[in-house]
Amino acid sequence: MKIDGDYLWDKTGEPDPEIQQLEEILGTLRYRPQPLEMPDELQTDARPGFFSGLGARLLPRFAIAATIVIALLGLGLWLGLQRLQRGQPLPVAKTPDTSAPGSNPGSVPMRTPNENQNQVATVPSFDESPNDETHPHRVNRPLLGANASRSPHEARKGAGKNPQLAINELQEGKAAKDQLMLALRVASAKLNLAQRKMQNTYPRDPVHNQHKLG
Amino acid sequence: MYELEATADVLLMTAQAKPSIAERSVETVPEAALVEAVLAGNRDMFGRLYQLYAPLVHGVLLARLPRSEVEDMVQDIFLHALRKLHTLRDPRAFGPWIAMIARNRAMDFHRRSHETTEITDDLRSADSSQSRAEEILGIICTLPDAYRETLVLRLVEGMTGPEIAARTSLTSASVRVNLHRGMKLLRAKLGFKEGLS
Image 1: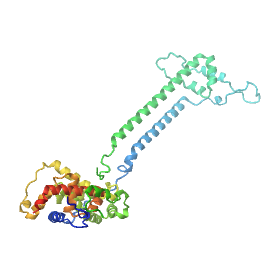
Image 2: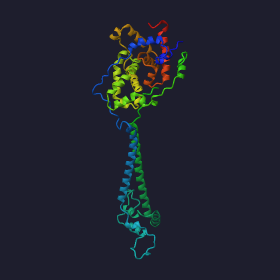
Image 3: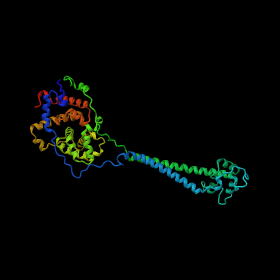
Image 4: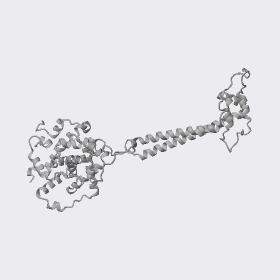
């Protein structure tokens, strides 16, 4: 078998007459230089903008992060509003007195927690009925304000003395827990929805690296 | 130097390793600077890219399309490339990129048309050497894809093997094998024993 050698590869070495003949015949079909006719209005498209370049890849992450931040802000705002609606705690409740009454005769007499309970329990507007089915999660704002600074230990002590108060506190706690769980579920659903939307909006481009030959 | 008695496969083994496009620096790839210049707004530089790569695109199309379609499509492809140049991520890969555009355009052409080629007046009035050339080109086009494109670039456009490898981003070894195996098939189909003419 005749070997073409280097001539076929890089036109060096001993020329192959058959290849030369083919080159001569096929050379008539060779590209003849022609000027490229570029219309004046033809412009190179602008460089990819933020939303079609790097931003397109980062946008889903930005969206998810923004959703989380918004959800957290909303939750914080909601909790703050709830706290405001419950009213300010009584000023006297800020300094729980652990000393015995009358130990400091020169100072202004302070109420004991039990005294606070007694006072709060007699607020006329407070509906103490635990069987109020029309408002199962009704917030007892004066009571919450009065008990806001009480320690759990004190609350348990007070509950021992006043079972009705303990039931109310449990209901309040349950209602607050339910509302918090509902808010978390809503935030989670919104996050999932945003993530799904971003995945559908920006599919991966399958023709990247199209210049690579298989 | 390679031994004259060596076969194509042995040549493949002894070929010197050629750096890929990714390994070549921007300085050694002038088209990278041209692409950057065009992207910066210098449209005249695109004319230089056109001069450099028009034979490649012409050869890629000639291996796949009727000759009457090739000239116009070369222009179309370069205008398309100018519009979409910003999508080229690696300026050093302009050659492979535009070659792939040409291959895709050729495939689109065959999808739209029904593989019918009308005999135009130009073909009828072509002289005997031209018709012989087109006859041989038709035989080359019956070869497998990898062989026919490489053979057209080598025998029609007059590019050397290293040039083909550099412009298409194929490895030197692949181009060498394609050339030798394609030439072997072409010889068999042409029947060189009887002579070409």
